[in-house]
Structures are given as structure tokens and as C-alpha cells.
Image 1 (tube, rainbow, N blue to C red):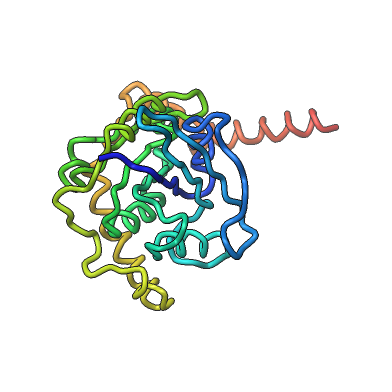
Image 2 (image 1 turned 45 degrees about the horizontal axis):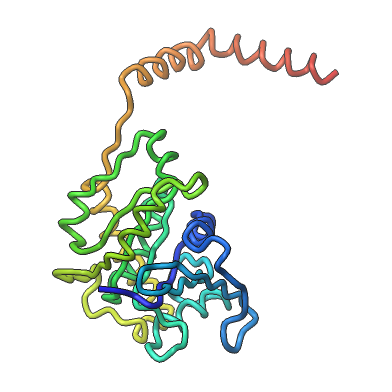
Length: 251
């Protein structure tokens, strides 16, 4: 399966634009989405069959529109005749904050559009003792490629490009929310109820797809510090000394 037009979507501050810049290099330009003054960043990813258009959609926490930027995302994904409607989506999320970021992913997945999950900032998640279970994720979302990246240094970008060129699609589609359509989700009450339902599904999914690892040595060090710093006698003495030192440094 080859794509002609792909869009990047993700929460603000997940490194989405960094991924876009890595994929497109200098082959990009900035314009405006039709009818609004919201920036539209478009780039080209070169391939053997020509080039693939990459669109960097505005950052959004949800598909539901609550601002001009989010309305652009809603309009692009909800209207198959929109000039920027993509054939596939790359969902960029912060790997160290999966619960919040997976809300947007589940919304996109339920549209049944070919989707790739990009776990950016994976180095931060790893240092925090979190490892992603790819096998468990594939059992729940078959056909969704998952790539761990650190866009700041370019780690994982080659895998994204190779997967795009090979093609991907959802198989054995099982929506997170049954009978989900964007047109039915405009009502604020429906949005609130559906969001709560999604978070319940995400909270049930997290333990299966994330391995939380904390070294025994780290636990021992923390416990030792706690015994001293919160001690009913030594704790107060340490606190008093710190305040005196701080006072001396100031004056």
C-alpha cells in the first residue's frame, strides 16, 4: 500500500513538529488552511515512486474542536473531500505521558484510517522506568505500527520512513468506542460522556502495554533517605539547619 498524502497529529509539546522536520528536511513550506489564518506546514518525503506529501496538523488534545486550531483538525479528518484529508495518519505522543496522549490516539483509531503510533521522547520514558510492550499493543490494535523515537536526535526516524514506504493498514478493526463518528460527537454532553468512557478504556489498557520497572537499588536509596528526612527528630533538625543556611545565603 502506497500513500500520496499523510498527516501528523498529536498533543502540543510532544515533538510532533520535530518529527515533521526530520521527515521532510528542507522540502517544506508554510501556508494557511482554507478559510482560516491557522498555519499549514506541508513537506515532501521523497520515495522511489516520487514523493509523499506530509501535512503537520495543528497540535490538539482532542479531535473535538474548542479552538480554531482544533477546528482545522476536525474539518480535515471529518470531511473526505477536504483538500488536506489524509490517506494515513501518524499520531505522535509523549511516551512518558501515555494516559493523556492515548485519548487522541483512540479517537483517531476509531476513524478506521491507516494509523501509525509514534512514541516520541522514548528516552525520557525509559529513564523513568517505563518500557512499552509492543506485543500486547499489537494484540489490541493489530495493523498499527508502533515506533519509538527521539526526534531531537533523529532516533527512530529511519524506521518511520521505511514503514511509510512499505505501507500499513489496520487489520481486525475493533473500535474503542462502538458506533463512533465525529458527526455524532459535536454535542458537548456526548463529548464529555465519551471522553470519560475512553479514559476508562485507556486506564484498563495501560497495565497491559506498559512495564513499570524501578530498580531495587533506587528503592533502597529512597527508603533510606525517607527514614532520615521524615524522622520525628532528625527530620526537624535537618529542616531547621537548611532554613538557617538559606537565611545566611540570602543576607
